[in-house]
Amino acid sequence: MSTSPESSSSGSSPSDSSQPTGIPEGWQVAPEAAADSAPVSADQRPRRSGRRQLAGVAVIAVLSIVLFGISTLISGNNRASALTGHPEVLRQGCTWDKSGNYVQNCKVWSKSQNKYVIVQIRASNGSDNGIYLLDGMRAAEDRSAWTTDVQAAKVYDGSTDTTLVMPVGGASSFYTDWDGGAGDKNTTIKQETFLTEELPDFLAANFGVSKNNNAIVGLSMSGGPAVTLAERHPEQFKVVQAMSGYYQTDNPLGAAGVFASQTMVSNYTNGILNMWGAPGSQRWTDNDPSKNVNKLAENGQVLIISSGNGFLTPSEMSKLSQQDQISAIALEILSAVSTVLMQLQAAQSGASVISLPNYGGHTWENWGRALSDGKPHVLDALRNNPPVTQKVQLVSAAGSPDPDGATKATQAALVAAKASPVLASSDLAVASGESSASTSSAESGTSTESGTTSPAAESSTAETSASESPSADDPIAPDTPVEAVAPSAPATSDVPTAPDTRQSLTVIPNSASSSAPTTTPTR
Image (cartoon, rainbow, N blue to C red; front, side, top):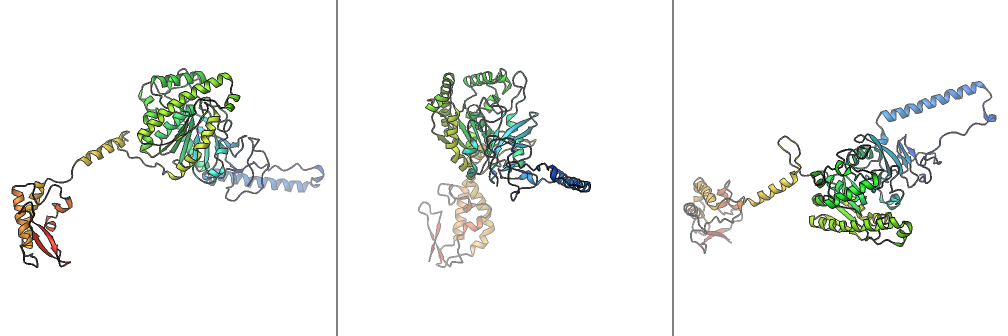
């Protein structure tokens, strides 16, 4: 197996000439092999024109066969379309990233946004696990900061056996579907559709990534949206890690923060209205992670959350200008307050919450540390938590799903539990009395070996008395189990005979009422 490309995105370094076992024809193995032959010197050229013609015919024949094979591979069943693992294999249409670590840059078509989106991907060694890593407010359009500011592929190295998925771009988008266009160019933003519908199809077809065995990680601007995406798509994400996020957005202060960040970073002055409509609307509530955190508990998902304390480390201070230091302190203090509130809200909802201690400011040094600290918890949830493949849901009469189906089903179950399935004693006595006539002939011939009073006669007397005037001493008490007095078979429960064990039955009067005898076996 060849080594990872480290310096060139074109993958032009030499590689092994042999194709590794299990790699379908047509894939490119890292680094890309340069198959061009060296130019032939003048003294090596054939001296006869006939040989040159034969060589030319042979080359054409070989090229024709190769082209035919490639076209068949592409047009027919492409065996490489479901290749799982093999990080050393460069997928079709992708190029190696200069960060190395087998990260490749792939262009994924987004129909909803009518454009290609660059996604940086590092394949697993063989598992179908995927970890989506969302960028921050100032996300660049050419590369994800997870490959520049934090080497995520080194944190989640080959030993983790996971596919890293790092979408590029999305500045000020909040990784959601916008109701209207963004900015002066009226840009279409459908990040949720891309991340949950379009990108999973590409990953499944080219990297073998499961659509319901994933984690999602977000920071700063994308911290809250990562939680929201997990809440809204539990069948896709089993675990979510949020770092230095802002989770209470459906309020005047939260809306002001969204407006300020979008305006200063991307000049989206219309974002406050075009993203989710007017603040305070249902769309804002639906996308507030703190108001929907109970969904994590309902679906058994795991929330891993952290923030710094706002005190910059010496290394952070050495890397930041004075103005950036002030921003890093202020933003992280605001995030710390929001994080503590989210921790309390999640715990009250019953969700599984893992709080990671951290320190520092609103910086990538902080988030790189959190990524490493959260890794064992993310991997544990991916490997041990079952995927959410089905959700309890009711449908309307027209057959459309009811968004409140799970809640209604729970309420219906509670109502049914409160209704007692035990019939009233008077109804049971009447039912028992009606059946006594049909069983009296069979019971009259039954007697005990000791010659005591016939149980059939005693039972008939008790039933008649109970049918006329039920009382607390009724032989069929209200707390009697349903099985003992089931109306469908009263005859078999009224006569406690045991012919197989040859036990004699003696009638012992009840201490509470002489009209309600009970029977005990005597040996």
